[in-house]
Image (cartoon, rainbow, N blue to C red; front, side):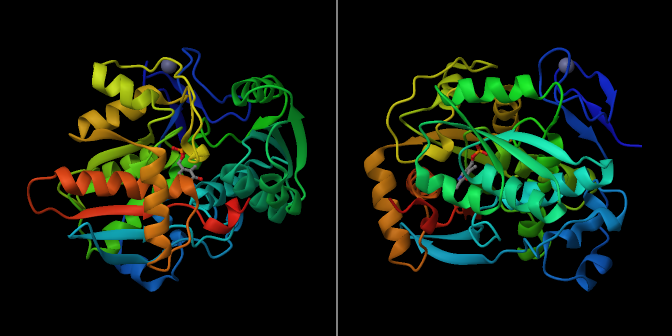
Length: 365
Ligand SMILES: *Cc1c(COP(=O)(O)O)cnc(C)c1O
Ligand SMILES: [Zn+2]
């Protein structure tokens, strides 16, 4: 039977619908053994569920899929280097967050949960709302009252109940956490089932590169749902003997809000709440990431690093991607700005994979 494990104090807990973090305050992970039967994988359709034996859902009947995943891995010349980009804005709700939502909401069905809460004003909220409505699960979303109406339109279209909170993003999260003592907390940052969906990012890259891991992956980081997913995914592949090592993880933050960057540079194991300046990359402007300790460990363990990008660099990258036929949102463009910086400074030939995380149409002002 699967269990929760605390990556920090190593305590175990049964999978319980009320528990969303460890008594020590840390986020929880799952004890789950993944298998990768390549012959079976190859017989299945082009969705992330082709890695069925690596996804912690017990019965096939619980699966709620909208055909998500197995996105293209595009080869591209950038800043004079060859790179590969995972086109992860090609998901039902327009961002890679559907990787996490399909697994998390499938788990809700398995647990018989009929109502959840989540806090997000952006892509995670949209993804959870869309999959919940398909599953017939009631979804209550806490958002800052200041969230622009345009961003709420998609969430509203999926019929989620909106709870607008006066105050900051942090205050909104606090309100959701209070409510989470009674209602299941389907949080993309706390709930480990979300990470066991985003980890399929690693599996797809592994398959698309001919069952090999790249040397380096360049990934945006706010709360780290993609970064930790990629880390867990490659780690599982390594533990199963499918790849030799986990790629170096290069994290990208906006210079306007960069708590992970600061902690990494200073050698800290934790972050301290960062100041939040104005940035177009609002999707990764997270002052106090709840899984900071795990994020820092993953970057350090893989020999990675953290880069920051300026507002100007983000805008240039966004325009450049548009000219290559990829209309992405600013948060997604921050990754490309970071990727270019990384390519400029790297010394030797290596295989680098990065990603386009979010569709541009979401952020028309
Ligand atoms: C969520 C998101 C990210 C990464 O954010 P995390 O908080 O680290 O999970 C990056 N780009 C887009 C478009 C996103 O929606
Ligand atoms: Zn703990």
